[in-house]
Length: 450
Image (cartoon, rainbow, N blue to C red):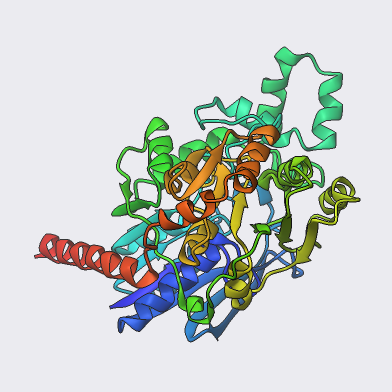
């Protein structure tokens, strides 16, 4: 089959969960003999215009078509974040010229959901994998501005105000504006691109009512919608999107070949591996580590890019000051994953948002490493408390410290948790299942035509 994968971004410039998943799937499908190609956005904040051309290259053997976009440059940047007419028009011509057998979208957060409409209009079978909550939440994470969790069932004004609350201009004007007038005023302003593309409102004051209606319509375009977790499926169901199938995520475990056996010792090596951002709860982990009994040997290695959120990293360093057990290791390349996980006894995932199906949990399991995580979203689906890891309640530093302390106080707990780790599904396993979906969609399309 000729398969086109569509992702918001792609390596090597971007290496978060969706990008790495798309790469792993592309490689697995290619390995099975399919002609696989990726389309993604590139640049994002670079270039003199919104559209800065297209380049073609190959990454790890996969052909990649990169659309160079500067999201700040269109006449209406806020609308282009979800409905990008320029990208949709390009897709129309691209699909007409290349005519793939199947299009599989993993994210359109940088390309606009009009790409789904373009594929549907072309009559090509379309699969959408929901990797996060972008279709429900402009900020993706379903977190309110006060840090509380959201279920996505909100009126447009509340969503709009939540997103725009990080704007100083928005907050400043609201100080002098009666609360009852705010929805009407901002509801009008958000429709005037001349105002909303200005710094301070750009990317923040969206016409959420239009966004909700448009994305609801676009979600009717795919022939198949997939979720990697029951939680994400349930959340979309609550918001009126019931036709979602759950297919557990596969993982590229080629790095396991470089793994050696874990060394035994009295020291418990806790680890964090991921983005160093407040939403990831790294500060909870640092504080929890400081609360552990210092008489019992333990270490915390924090792996992640220390340059992207410097203010937050400085706060973490300040919290960790004076505790030599806490070590900031820096960025972990994918090629170093084996070495990092082999040198980690327990991985900690203290996220403050729902997460969907974090790659790092299954990667830890593949290396025989139990996980402590927030009892939330897709994380709690992957971990069975006391069997293959431990759970604590979201945002509770004391709860996290308690579970970490158990590893120090119960000598046999670590070995018990290791024994409970299940087999990790590979990208090859998932590719076989998805290949069947593709074939079924193509067969159905042929039957309809005949």
